[in-house]
Length: 192
Image 1 (spheres, helix red, strand yellow):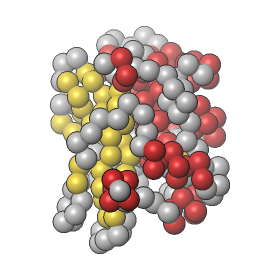
Image 2: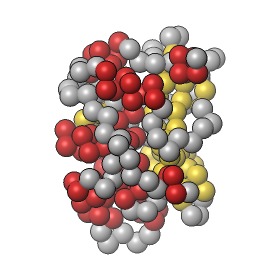
Image 3: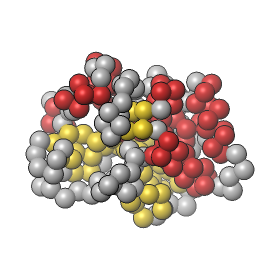
């Protein structure tokens, strides 16, 4: 489990501002599940999804997501992992392969899975709710932002301690939310 608690370049929970926010969210919580819910709801509701809000800058590191209050799903998952890990709750990154507009082409979507003592690994998606998207924290039932519907879509089984290299490349290569949207990677590219 140590790899799912680690601080790193992109999941930089030891950054003072991330650690302070993590401790603030955990204050007076009754248990691990309550802390996880608070962290999830903070990232889901208080950090803007870059595409939904047409907002720059492009962020990747958890501390930058917190500082600028914006990020794509991937960056938001980095912040959520950092907040949870700072509270000693094992958290991994995970991914889905989804259509972009209900028909191919496909792209990778980033979310998290958190280890809850009562339930084991439990996936949560803090990308941000909007019309047609209603992700919730209600263990043991998963209520993710996007169900798998279209042939070719998939829940990818891997638990990542660090972001996929293709995601880091995407978020560090482009300086605007539009350029990121124009270059969303697909899992086929990621596996080649």
